[in-house]
Length: 216
Ligand SMILES: O=C(O)CCC(=O)C(=O)O
Image 1 (cartoon, rainbow, N blue to C red):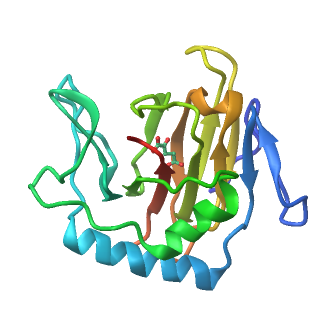
Image 2 (cartoon, protein in one colour):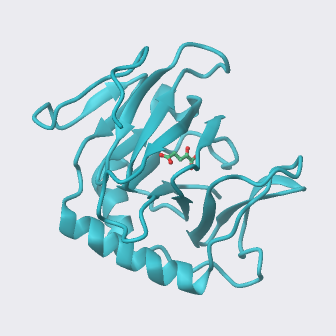
């Protein structure tokens, strides 16, 4: 069921400009067409068959609601030892290479020449969410983060660089791309909830989010 606008929410129609700013981040609604989305999902399936999705836990031992895996020379992991990048999957294998279809999105939207070395793949089931956080495990926090949404709509919330400050929310749909750069690079952001059944891209439903970073 779709609810009305919530406080701070930006409601967009598909006919609006090709990008909008939300608390300093740049959102490109519908940046990827259906064929591009399908090609990326197929490439990600191969990544997940070589480096299976796992359920990370926080340093406090709580299971995250998303499942994740990575591609690239560095993958993001979290366990009792905390958040960090590692050159290998928790099961020991190297992370697969970043698919070219995903790299293309980085080159189109990141605004930088350097290639990413980390591609985090998050799978959200219907009830999964991601709490507000900053991305600050990378060696150099000036490189942008490029995020791709695939599958069901998700309510993305973004604030400033201080926890507890005002936030804005926007529904992200399949094919949307968000770039966190400049002042927004360290903005607190997260996913409050999914709107299950809003996309037919993933036969099993849910949502995939891909984030590309220069981590090392
Ligand atoms: O799922 C999303 O759109 C956001 C993912 C995210 O915040 C992250 O991977 O750091």
